Length: 103
Image (tube, rainbow, N blue to C red; front, side):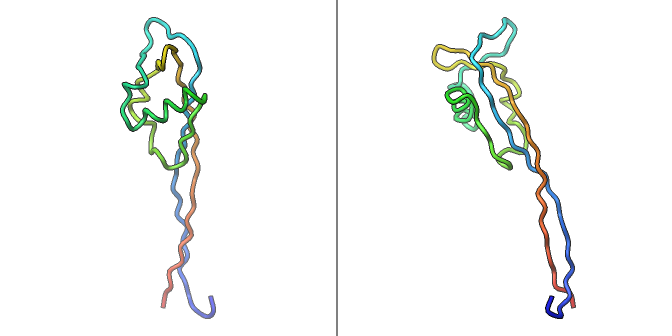
């Protein structure tokens, strides 16, 4: 550029997004059920949002993986209702262009 030389590179990184969906429904006898209030603080608000609004979208990069407590929970109770949880995972690649001046 303008008579100068640059080394150009492209790096790629992956990010994931997650959607938590909550559908009203009674759990089967052998299902894991937890009250929303008993969930760890780092996922409680997200699950509460899914229950009250139908889904919660965690944007790309918020979580590297689905938080472990959510892997163990199939159903939650909130108020006097039971909800089945399901998860949607999305992946995206981000590309970063770098330019380093060389002599």
